[in-house]
Every structure is written in structure tokens, then in C-alpha cells.
Amino acid sequence: MKQNLQNNIWKYAILLIANKRIFVAILGAYYLTIPDVTPKAIGLILLVGNLSGFLLEIPSGYLSDKIGHKQTLIISRILMLIATIVFLLANHVTFLFLASFFFSASSAFQSGTGSAFMHETLQGLKREHEYSKVMGKISSIGFAVPIIFIVLVPFLVSISYKVPFLIALIIDTIGLLAAISLTVPPVAPEHIEEIRATNFIQVLREGYRLNFFSLALFSGIISGTLFSVGGFRAPYQAFLEIPVIWFGVFFGIGRALASLLLAYSGKIKKYITLPSFYGFQVILYSLLLVVLGTISNRWIVVSAFIIINAFQWGLSKIDEGYQVEIIKSSKFKATLLSTGSQIDLAISAISGYGIGLLIERFSYQYGFFYSGLIFLTVLIPLYLYMLHRHRIGVYKVIN
Image 1 (spheres, rainbow, N blue to C red):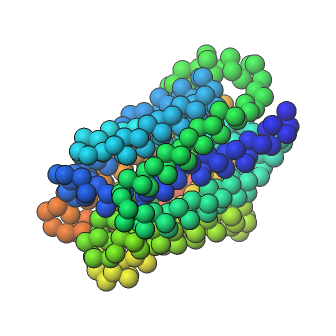
Image 2 (tube, rainbow, N blue to C red):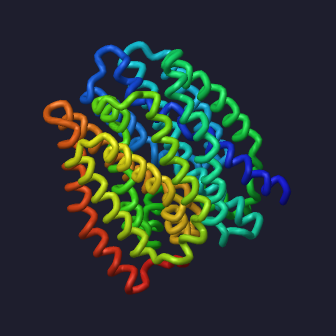
């Protein structure tokens, strides 16, 4: 059993590799090749996808705690496979809405569930204290391996925009097989019975008792805003007349830097505190959004997107590590972690649609600038609240 649990680590790394959409660097540009797609339509696609994820996030996490994490991960991989097929067949904007729905549904079933599954795997191996370290390393692999495909994708576009989706289809099939082969960590019978007897309101009360939601809200606002901005990366680069063949290279550089940061997640977390970690992100991302909103030099824009890409994903497992530590005593980790993802999706939906409207009516810079302004206005008071809570010892985390 121990060896099978150990194998979950590398199998989950395969899942993380399969999760990376190798076509993401050109996805926005691909949208624009479909008839009737405009920046406003892209905003609507983001709205539909994120709203779908928002509605499915909590039920999927709750279902995960009910039917089992492995089964939920398998469902996630099937939904991702369907999303890729719909993207591949797309010849009308309706297909893009459908693909976005299935992709978000897949992400909803994955988020929280994967983290909870791996935390329980490490508990079974008596290595739960190494969560940030282990997850950082396998996430680093999950980012590093797809880079070669991401860099090649724009060159494959010269053959057809459909080719990257064909490659993604093969990768998704491998991801599904990896999910099916996972070993379920041993769980005490009373654990399962308590989950079945507990209602969702009690789960929310537990999150409140553990002081989890302020951290989840802060993290969700950051990731939701950055995700919506990233949805317009390719269209904006195309607008600046940057050759499509470079999109994958720029995106790959960001992912390579993210991979490097992820590899050292455990070490980085040892030398920072919770307030310094989140405070750094507020300052960094606010500055980058202001840069995107005020400067149109193509190389500065490219550099800003690379840095956002690198830190958004490169710091993700440290953030996740803090959240898991806070709820480590909970039997509903997947459900609680899903609430953070739901906030992320809500912000992404609103922000993505808003940016699309601003771009359609004014310019790309207006969309990015106002996102940065709202980002800073909302997060500063929330950060001060979290700083106070940390000082009085509310957050039980290991620095």
C-alpha cells in the first residue's frame, strides 16, 4: 500500500501536466478566427465559463467529499477531454461557449479535490508536513514539461489552428488514464460516516471557525483578477502586431520562471511570513496592472505579462500551503478549498466581462488600468484586516 501511495505523487504530476492547456498562449487569438468573435464576445465567453465554474465549484467539492476524491478527479478528466474536443470542432461562437463551460466544469471538479487527495496521500505516507515542498516540486514538473509544447504551438498554427487541440486531446487521454490508476489513501470508517452525516451549512461554519474565509477571499480576488486579465493577453499582443509565433515563447518563459519558483516553494515559505507573502503580491500585481494600463510599448507589455504569469502560478502552492495548514484538521478540505476557487471564478467572471466591455468601447489600456485600480482599492483594507488578525494569532500556520 505504501508504494502505491508513493506512486500517487508521480501520477498526480501527470495530472498536473495534463491540466496545462498547451494552446492557452494562442487561445485568445484563436477566438478571433471564429466568425462574430470580438473583445466583448471574449468577455462573454469568460463570463459564461467562470459563471459555470462558480455555480459548480461548491457542489463539486461537496460531491468530492461524498463520493471520493479519486472518482471526482476522473470526472474532471472526462470533462476536460470533452472541452478539448469541442474546441477542436469549433466553427461558431456557440462552440466556444460550450468548450468554456466544460473546461470550467472540469476545473471545478479538480480544484480543492486534487489538493485534498494529495494531502491525504501525504498523511498516509506520514509526510503531511512536507505538503508545500512536495506539491511545489510536482507542480514545478507540471509547469516545466508542457513548456516545450507551449513554445511549439504558435509554430504549429502555421499548419492549422486545430493542430494544438489535437495534441491536447492526446495529452488529455493520458491524464484520464493516470487518474483512473490512482490509489485511494486509507480513510478511517468514522471519517466517511461523519462526512455523510454532516450538512453543507456545518461545513461553512467549520470554515468560519477555522478563520479560513478571509484568506480564501484575499487569494480569490488576486487570482480571479489576474485570470481575467490573462484572458486578453493574446488578443492584446495581436493588437500590438506582435507575431503569433512569439506568443508561445513569451508564455513559455513565464511558465519556466513559474516552474523555478514552484520548485523552491518549500524553501521560500520558510523565510516569509503570511503578511509579507500577501503584501508582496498586492504591491507587485498592482504595479504590473498599472503598467499595462498606461504603457503600450510592446516589449514592456510582453514583460509585464511574463512576470504576471511567472508569479501568479509560481507562488500558487505557497498560497495553497497556507490554506491547507489552516484547515488541516478539517474533514472537508475539498469543500472548503472550493469556496476559494468559487470566489476566484466570481471575480474572473465579473472582471473578464467588464474588461471586454471597456476594450470594446475604449481601449485595452482602459480595461487593464481600471482592473488595477479596483484591485488595489479592494485589497488594501482586506490586507490590513488580515494583518491585524495575524498579529493576534488567529491564523495557525507554519512559516
